[in-house]
Image 1 (tube, rainbow, N blue to C red):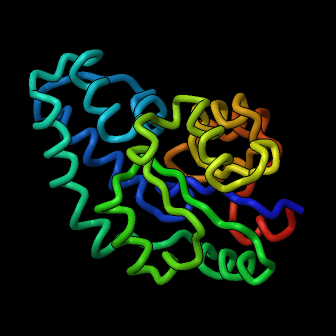
Image 2: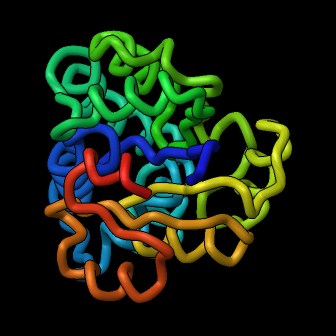
Length: 213
């Protein structure tokens, strides 16, 4: 049984991916920028800064990085602070894991000004030993080093951490870094389910299944 967990936030703990997808596509649509079907898979591990760079340098969005990030923040803040819900059985499962003495930690691309208020509103912020945004590490979840650094900060070998994420690219990178990986079903990444199942050590469709791992 694993005792140290590192959770993604969007699409893993909270049902925020429709909001995330909508606001990112809205920015591109408003500026008449075309994008492929793999957009969300590419940008989800990058964080807001990395996504802004991708939009500007790869997709040709003619706004400054500051302007792009300001739009992201504007479109997201209200949803995160007021309405985004926890996914099914997340709260009960986290409480059960905590009662077992597990170390619960978060690593997400979302910035603290959205992440922290959302966790506090849902009543689960204090269950976590560490709540990290990629901003805290000055890199993204596309960088294997971020998982090694997180394990070091938790104080355990990287191979003793179970990383949970709904995004294939993040799962793949965490696996490359040496973590155990549990894929998490989310409707926005359903087309990657087979790929994630093949890659991951475990896969859950409902959070309560985590208690049996």
